[in-house]
Amino acid sequence: MSKIKLNEFSALPDHEQNDIVFQIGECLNIYVQGNKKYVLYAVDLFFVELEYKNLVDKITGKRAFVTGELLDKYSNL
Picture 1 (cartoon, rainbow, N blue to C red):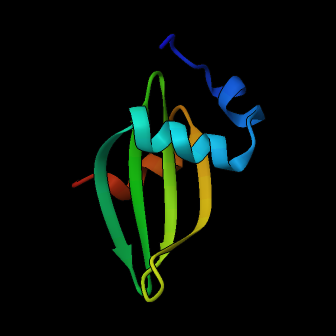
Picture 2: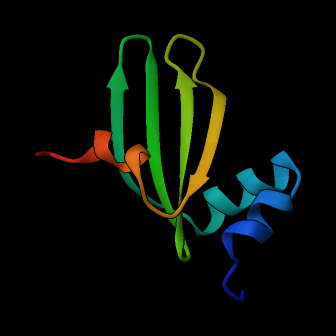
């Protein structure tokens, strides 16, 4: 499979984005805050953060990005 770019990923329908994350994404870290769980994946040259509601374990949000503040919560600093 050829590398996918962030803008190509963002243009895909939600279910295709999820397929890519779960098929080729590498889970890097999990962060829990209150009743939410955030799972960080590396997909080719960008990151995808999936947000879950803990009680139902359902994806409630998704953000794709290259760098920035969204990575800060996964830092051990």
